[in-house]
Length: 320
Image 1 (cartoon, helix red, strand yellow):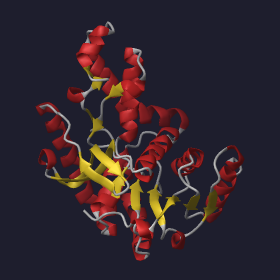
Image 2 (cartoon, rainbow, N blue to C red; image 1 turned 90 degrees about the vertical axis):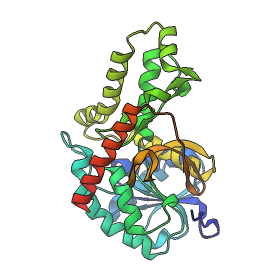
Image 3 (tube, one colour; image 1 turned 135 degrees about the vertical axis):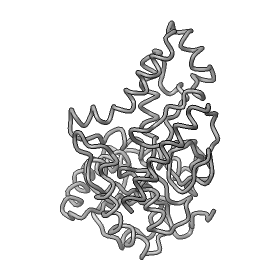
């Protein structure tokens, strides 16, 4: 694994490519976080990027000092992170996989520009379908794999923790559970490793007066999987939750936290899966993805993970 070239990057500088709902919400969340002192916004519509930069900059007196401006690809060279949100948005009734061909085409215009400038930092893919686009980004950039990863199921996992917290009437931050696999319709709640502050999920449910485990798990899993569709149906797009997820990933990188997050990265034989990006818990720090974390999965969960990978591989081979 090639380590991040820290001498070639400014740990306080971030670039966001794509100033739609997700990009601008991420910029706003990062401005408030105080993680960075310089933020470059790049968009095919230069005026949109300028407008977002100006609008967000007006809140700086209430936050930490930061320089926010619209830029171009020449501004990326020394950034510690590039956040790729550019792509077509998911429309009502459309799956994330429906976006594949449109967004791979967009990536084929963006990533060569990044590669041309010999970029040495981290490439965080947020655009959907994130697992397929992460695989495409690794192939197009030819960067070391630890430096190219996707936001994966970080948001889905947060949604799972939120729903379980509500179900059990407990702080969602005390819930330890992951959504793994595709960020999409074949995602898998890893129930067999879920716990509440070390107490197995089933035991904690009984402690809180819930005994219908199978029905509750099925309902909560479906609610998490369908939550994006519900939000899109009601307000046409989702962006606040993913913006907070982007901020959380950036914290792990910039602060070298070695946090365990379910990001999307290319598999190399784990659980019998190779050659495709999937979301699995991984240690994330200043060098990007350090290593995957082998959480406990039962046979049924492993089988579902393999099916998810097979489906993504089929879609990728048909589109790339």
